[in-house]
Image 1 (cartoon, rainbow, N blue to C red):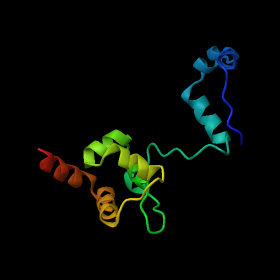
Image 2 (cartoon, rainbow, N blue to C red):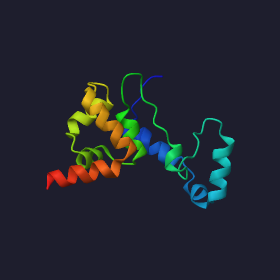
Image 3 (spheres, rainbow, N blue to C red):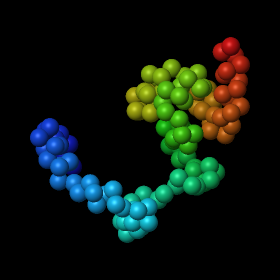
Length: 126
């Protein structure tokens, strides 16, 4: 699929073509019905218990993005909370580098008990 950029005029025309009154009139039930009828819509996991949100790790590696998403933290918040440089975290998530063995172990501990690790990091940062 080609990556197309819209011009300002195309963007304005697309927004003008939207029936905003119809969208504003939609109820939650209408939205839920449309989502249920769409076979391409991803499952709604917003109410899923935390233990149901498993992180799939690549063989021999760790899904840093998956752990961060499970904790519902931004890159900056995750980096600050657990003491990682933000740029390093970005490199891991974008595949430019991989955490070393000791860091992978720490990331697995963060996945298992994030509050413990955050408390230890905070105590040693003070």
